[in-house]
Length: 62
Image 1 (cartoon, helix red, strand yellow):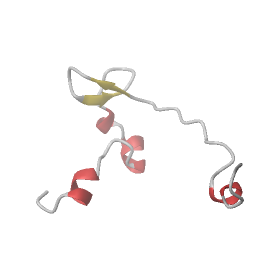
Image 2 (image 1 turned 135 degrees about the vertical axis):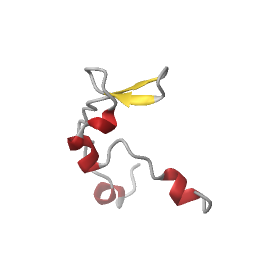
Image 3 (image 1 turned 30 degrees about the vertical axis):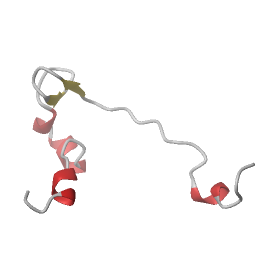
Image 4 (image 1 turned 90 degrees about the vertical axis):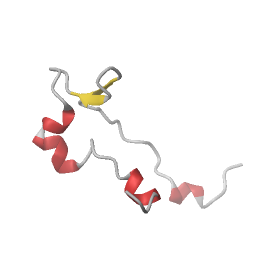
């Protein structure tokens, strides 16, 4: 049985997300299909998809 509130609290379906980059384990970087680092793409930087804020939110010494 599904609780009544979950009908309104959760989206009915998740949006399809296409990531324009992949993680390169040897470089330890997200890279674009042409091999450039993902941080060199101004469109990606504008939306902040390649930057992590986890450290600054969880550690006071960052």
